[in-house]
Length: 148
Image (cartoon, rainbow, N blue to C red):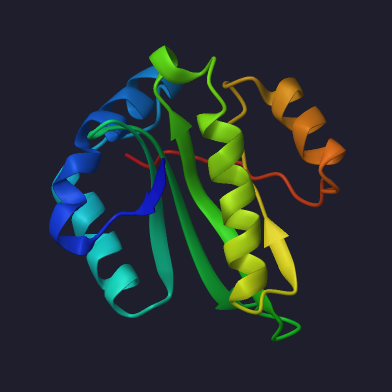
């Protein structure tokens, strides 16, 4: 079942965050307080939301999205900021259902464009094929440099 994560339940995302950071070797790891410092005002301002997929009461998947004007065109853009399903629930349709809910919400919120990302070390070819099958095209890649 998919629902919106209320701000008073944001701590419940911690298992997802740690699992994501560990599996993807995400630079810097996951820190709940940093996550909350970003997401609480994002949700409260109406600029974004977190969708969660639950198995009973347990959150097994999550999808963060923001809706903002494009810097150049001014058109509203719905963008994914994170999308993750616990390995124990990947055989279900949890991830796909979160994806399609994002698309529906983006459209409902007036987005003219949907933007998806993926990490280079987490099934990039499989995700690229999924995105292209769903009408997305590769437009940009990002490169990171850690500063010391």
